[in-house]
Length: 161
Image 1: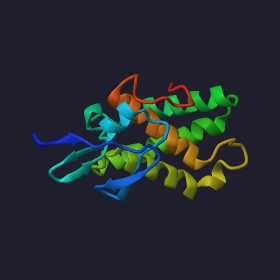
Image 2 (image 1 turned 180 degrees about the horizontal axis):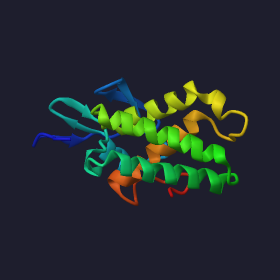
Image 3 (image 1 turned 90 degrees about the vertical axis):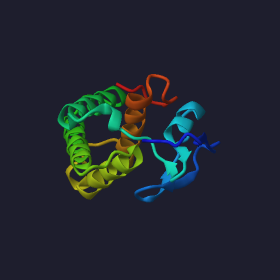
């Protein structure tokens, strides 16, 4: 994300909807701290810029696998070990890889793609899952924010694994 020399941090109201490059709007999660929110969206000469995962590098398979392991560990810790957690995490991994291979690098766009893909196939997970597709998508958003910004990225209600 390249910002002009005249860029400035936009004061954000957490839980608000702001413009985004790809989907028209970006939701600023209330679970993000002000520090993360200001890192996630900055104003440049071209408008709002969303938090990008470009800094995670080009090995999308490895990053997707790391994320899948984190999702399954989070779900297992929240509930109990279940095969459905591995299946949902694998779906999220595949969605992440697809997004990245298609040039998508915005956290919010990746989160939405993962949640929508899970939701589209929810009949595969519904009988055993204690969460829904958007719970997983929100965790992915927090996970990616922490991976990009660092350990102080969010004050999530869930520990990021």
